[in-house]
Length: 104
Image (cartoon, rainbow, N blue to C red; front, side, top):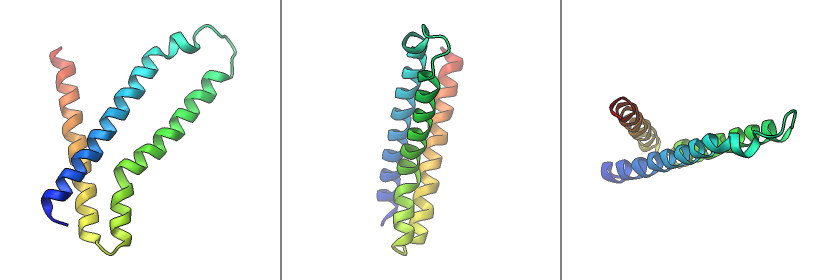
């Protein structure tokens, strides 16, 4: 796989992760309205734990799914590069989010 393809795939994976994080953040900001009125309810903890497990699965698929497939296909260097590029994009998106939080 050439470098441009790896960078594009890593950007798509990282952007998908950012979109997922935004959706979870929106849900969590609305969670008080959804679960807030029921004291001693077991529904909220169950929902949060299920969200946690689902998030782990989605994150694993987006971040390490393709690199593992490449690694198992004996494309070890491409696997490591794809993972590194994806983490790099996530770092850049994190810096942008932190900077925008400081500016606004």
